[in-house]
Length: 152
Image (tube, rainbow, N blue to C red; front, top):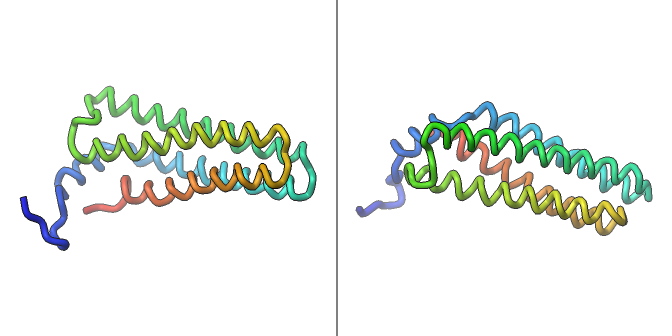
C-alpha cells in the first residue's frame, strides 16, 4: 500500500489498541518514575556535598521506586495478556510491547547501575548513574503520551 507523508498508517488499529490499554496504571507509573528521578537528583546533590549516607538513602529510594515501576508495568502486562493481547495481536501491540519492554529492561539496568554507584557514593559515580536514570525517565515521559494519550 502506497502512503504519502500526510496519510496516517493504521489509525483505526492504533486507536483500538490504545483504547485497550490501562492509562490509569501508566499514569501512576509516570508519577512513580518522575518521583524516582527526583530522588536520584537528591542523591547527586548529597554526593556532591560529600554526604554519602544521604546519597545512598536517596539512591535506595530511587531504586525502590524503579522496582515499583516494574511491578506496576508487569501488572499492566498481566492484565493485557489475560485478555488475550500479545505481541502479534496487532501492529500497535507489537510496537507497544517492544517499546515498553525495552524501556522496562532499561529500568532494571538502571536499578543495577544505581546499586553499583551507591557502593562508593562518589559524586562522579552517582552523577553518571543518575544521568542514565534520568535518560530512562525522559524516554518514558516521551513514550507515555504517545502510547497512551495522543489520539490518531
